[in-house]
Length: 249
Ligand code: PEP
Image 1 (cartoon, rainbow, N blue to C red):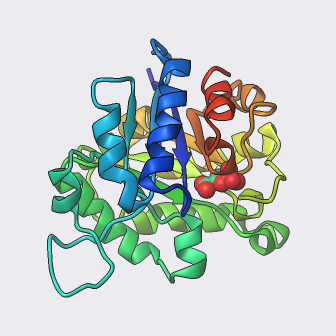
Image 2: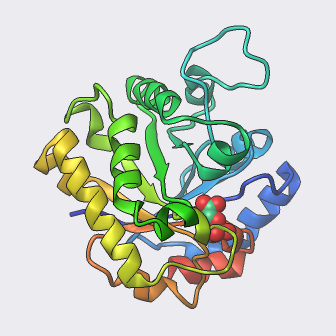
């Protein structure tokens, strides 16, 4: 009973005007689509516009990151209460670009995850190994550590809205997608570790998305794999027709 999620991560692309033009073209293409939940993650400057323009539709929007505190002297940050105040109920946490370029850690992801839960925001926690970790045979160890660190001191009931995105770093923005088998194997490791952390019932209900060079050409095969409950799409989510084709896999 895990409703798939197809999510678009717009990274640092699209002004408010461009974001609204995307919605004008995209909403009619996915109108009445109910099989999957459709989410967009615009930049902070476009988020309120996208939330307003998508209100009452089958498309929702979330933030690409947030701080864990409600307010304070933290230049450049946005708090959970600020997100809630504009009607935002979804957030990406620990995206690999935050980990690679802005020193994001899983200790902080854990704090952010607790804050998201406390504010009724659905968190999508991103995990995934680097190429060197995969080549060294450390994929399982890396993924298990990332899940354990993210979920430290989080109870099964607190984790009930949790979503995980498996995004192998070597597949993000590179054009080389994980094969469906490689992705399914990683998803199985993640669900097993989730079971250890929050119990079987919560782990079974947790949606685990795949991310990394998802395109209209490879989405169907990925979605056919057991345990892949949707996709987090970067580059291919920027063009309305391409992203709509992914939604209609
Ligand atoms: C992402 O940004 O989460 C992502 C998966 O990017 P891409 O689809 O471009 O690889």
